[in-house]
Amino acid sequence: MRKIYIRTSCPYEVIIERGGIKKCGEYISAVTKSRKAAVITDDTVQKLYADTVAGSLKDNGFECSVFAFPNGEQSKNLSTFGQILDFLCESGITRSDIIIALGGGVVGDITGFAAACYLRGVDFVQIPTTLLAQVDSSVGGKTAIDITGGKNLVGAFKQPSLVICDSDTLKTLTPENLSCGMAEVIKYGMIRDSHLFEMLENHTLENVDEIMDEIVYTCIDIKRDVVEGDEFDRGERMILNFGHTIGHAIEGWHSYTDYTHGMGVAAGMCLITDRFAPELSERLKKCVLAYNLPIGTEAPIAELLPYCSKDKKREYGNISYIVCTTVGKAEIRKSTVSEFEKAMGE
Ligand SMILES: NC(=O)c1ccc[n+]([C@@H]2O[C@H](COP(=O)([O-])OP(=O)(O)OC[C@H]3O[C@@H](n4cnc5c(N)ncnc54)[C@H](O)[C@@H]3O)[C@@H](O)[C@H]2O)c1
Ligand SMILES: [Zn+2]
Image: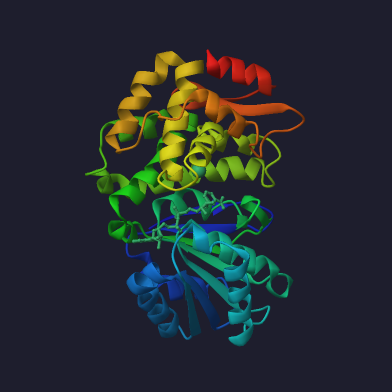
């Protein structure tokens, strides 16, 4: 077992352990005095892991209720949010009890937001079961839901009390979902860690499980460092957005249907590198392809640019984007939207 200590305003530990979810009751009992828990999950993850989690909680003296909603991004909305709040109330969860998010980033985001709002804040634990959730969304304290106007537009900063990452749970993911998480992993290598990137270059999607604990540990440690320096996302945290400005645009161009977030990020990293650090393009693309991710998009650049200028990270007609000039080093660049469009269009 490995642990990472996150020193944010409310500090907490991340446990990385194969088979860790079987012991979650023991770990959770160390971060709360309560013995009453509500587990929030989705229907897919419920079938796979809810009994294991509930069983371990009960073995450790917890009374535990489980709520599952239909899996997928379309559930990350106000209606499901309301159902979760009603469930917490009906289950008699009080301010001193504990809420557990068991699932991917959708479950983590909506449950974290419910934990931030219900009774003005109840402690919660993240048990992320997708690679994306383990290396990205479960750590850092950003929670959110989607509204008609856009994704993640309503949310709160709420750090969890504990995160338990069990890489054995990733074995039941579809290859597409694993690829999607690998895009974020490649991103971490590019922005901060040439050794991680080299490890990725020496593996493929087929055998990456061999190094999964090392990957999860390294990525969370990078996220820890960035988040500790900028908990409320005012500056430095932006480097985690490498590939994302264009990635979001590609997702938007595809109406968020046939293009996953990871595919968008992978193509976004390649497109920005092609323009601003072409000497790295070949290496990056080889790695991206080894994890079955796209190195570009059929969307014409000119059609993507309007989506970029709608990006949340834009302020006062300026746009920020991240460029990696060396593997392991990223810089934040700011320019006017028109300068960015000119550079991308060339
Ligand atoms: N809060 C943050 O900082 C942050 C960061 C990045 C992404 N996000 C959010 O995360 C979400 C995407 O996360 P995601 O990709 O995990 O999506 P997800 O939660 O929808 O999970 C993807 C699919 O995998 C299934 N699944 C989950 N675990 C499984 C397992 N172990 N075995 C088999 N199937 C499993 C789910 O049921 C779902 O169908 C988006 O809503 C995004 O906005 C948040
Ligand atoms: Zn991302």
